[in-house]
Amino acid sequence: MINPLRGMKDTVGEFSKKYIFFIENCSRIAKNYGFSFIETPILEETALFKRSVGESSDIVGKEMYRFIDKGKNDVCMRPEGTAGAVRAFITQKYDRAGGVKRFFYHGSMFRYERPQKGRLRQFHQFGVETFGVEDVKEDAMIILMLKEIFDFFGIACKLQLNSLGCVTCMPTYKDNLIKFLDTIEGLCEDCIKRKATNPIRVLDCKNKNCNKLLENAPMLLENLCPTCKDDFSELKSILDEFGVVYSIDKKLVRGLDYYNKTAFEFISDNIGAKNAIAGGGRYDKLVEFLGGRSTAGVGFAIGIERIIDLIVMPKNKKNGYYIGAMSDNALKLVIKLVIKLRKSNVVHTQYISKSIKAHMKASDKAEAKYFICIGENELKSKTYVIKNLDTKEESVEHYHIL
Image: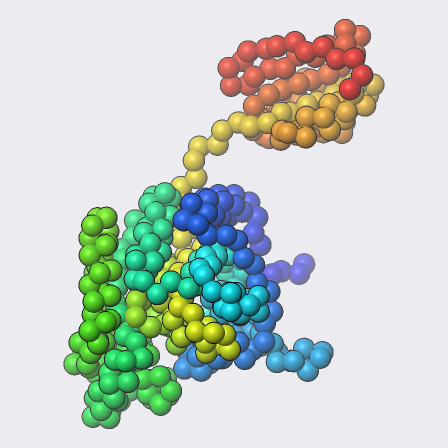
């Protein structure tokens, strides 16, 4: 027997039901906020992610599914959704058209990391991206949308906020941080590399020894320029106004290089040690960095496997029809009736004649709301009975030639 590769699972059964339920309702909420669907290719040029996600990130350094294809192209399977959405935004020349574009997406992402509960090598994300809005009010709307999603599914979580500054205040902060890092010894190998490529990423290190060494490191919030301070204050004010509870995490930098200004994560205490279930922020320079015209951007992504076990499905409601044949002669009529009703209804059937008891059992498994069974008597009378399996009410329908 051939099994799935390690860290990859089939979308089937209960997971499939929850996945569809999650995607349908996330999409509905996103559409209410003015977002439209986008789907980007699973396979992209490796350069896209090296330039956007960043050489200092674990994704690029350790986790990408990367290979040379038959055309000698250096390609990889998408490890996250934002870079592809930005590339599509530029490809379609939306950056030149101006205005505002809002997209939502969902689908498979790929990272070669150690599989564990809620973390697979092929996993799924739902995300949104807004292009063309510099105002911090859009950051607030993005966070409010994400909170609405988690509230809808009854997922208890906490919001953590930080500001990563901008091109005005970040250089000064990096200089201060590097001066501090030069005074300490014992950083892990990853942090030593990050110090040379993107020093603020050392704040994201999960190594306990590094965390101790960085306890007195200068923080981003203490080095913001007046504009970034005002934006962060306005963001907090809007969230306060709408009753969104949050905490400030001065070391929150996210795991990707492209973020600036607002950065946020939603965490849950119900999923284990690595408790981030969604995150995002602003990336005002990424479109320009990938070759487009300067365009502000902000978005988020939800790790679906991270929260799938927290979703409580609504109690199943019976839906659609079950139509069965009690004789071989009735099968032809049953198939015609099935085809007719399927134009506007969910219809279950079996292509074999059975007793009414056997068909009733099959209709229960199909969770059908209406039950129709046709045999010799129904053929002679040119009628059939529709039974409502919820109310037990019955109605008689006449037919000639369907």
